[in-house]
Length: 199
Figure (cartoon, rainbow, N blue to C red):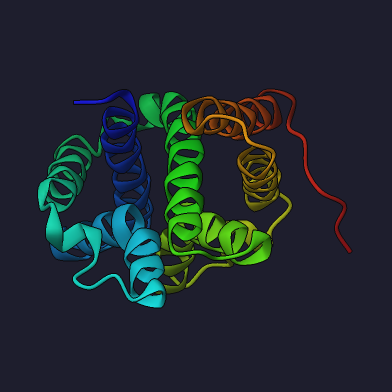
């Protein structure tokens, strides 16, 4: 198991837990919590694969992702009375998932011969579309449309990755630097409550 795949699974669990927690806070039943958890975890990557024409999508080629998403969602639901104490640490794992998903999505788009804008868009979609679907299903304003530095961190990491790849840098080094950029920016934004200007 390579490090990127391991981080991908950790990110999947973190995204699923965050989605399930939204379901718990909205007082959904077990099925609703599971749906939000799975959609948050694999929704972005699945949509990316459908747009790229990579069928069946990754979540059906390797069912480990859905299994982990279901398991993480069940854990949140079963421990919903005590889960508030884990909400802050979950944001840190979420940041790791965001950086990893961005790299995987952007890299896959480059393999499909997409240009800078297309590759960055696919990377951002991989990291954020699941959360958008979660928020729409939960009837709340999507996180990426609020003041949070989230999608903007992905854009920075995606552009860096494409530029490094096109300049001849190694795939591994480019991926690590891009993921590290997203994770660092997101963690700093959480720590210092950074946000974009709003109307």
